[in-house]
Amino acid sequence: MLYEFNLKTAPENLYDITQNVQEVIRESGVRD
Image 1 (tube, rainbow, N blue to C red):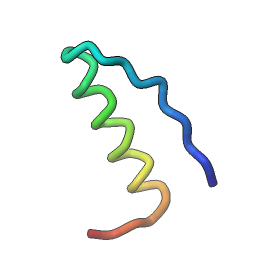
Image 2 (cartoon, rainbow, N blue to C red):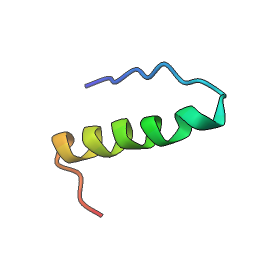
Image 3 (cartoon, rainbow, N blue to C red):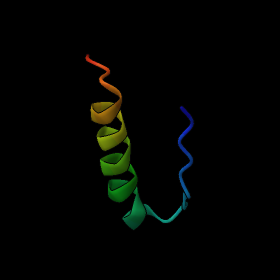
Image 4 (cartoon, helix red, strand yellow):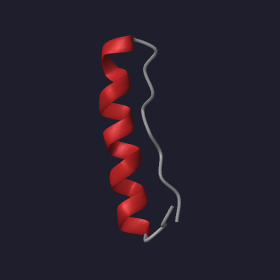
């Protein structure tokens, strides 16, 4: 399964990207 993110370089968008990645990890069933 492939996920694509619209990454932006603006610092204020970093948190949103992190949240998206964490959600994808949860949905994919990956565990630390």
